[in-house]
Length: 257
Image (cartoon, rainbow, N blue to C red; front, side, top):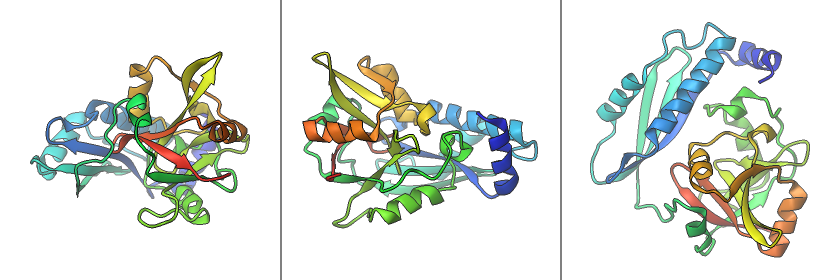
């Protein structure tokens, strides 16, 4: 990561954000991919604190976090969406929201492909206004203004007739992610199906479920996917799948671009 860019951002935004992990609690499995969430969180703490010693001076241990989760989240027969936050003073906050039994919960891309797309996504109308080395892109935090702006200008709605989410792209014309998920497209290369997901170097949050899929799916690779590639994929009818560690993998329909 470019250290000068990182330091400039930290000097402006220090102490005005929290690190964030959004975790699924499942009655049969507990906190889904918890170890991976904790690893990503600790990596973010290390990255920020190494560039600004005023941040995360007494970072919580994994055991501190697990204890907080067990104390706050009702470990019952319901699904919950967990927001785990650690502010720059190392205070832990846990918020939870009951979830209906998830409609999707596909743990493989091929399972998701068999779904009839029920959610619509749209391509952003302009490139994402951030560097691919922005620490607030490479780490999940409460600084969400850039993502919110992309949703606003494309008319995205959590509930309603508009598109559910927006596909983001950088100033080099490379697809990155959506406002809440990573993304993959199944292309046909030399007559064989291959899944591609954008490289982290394009300006991608390295999602926990993304890492899970990259380990468990031998035909999923990291690659550059351009806006033109996305348009061609739509024209050819190639499936597009979004995924995160709460919704897992689900197929989407791209509105005309």
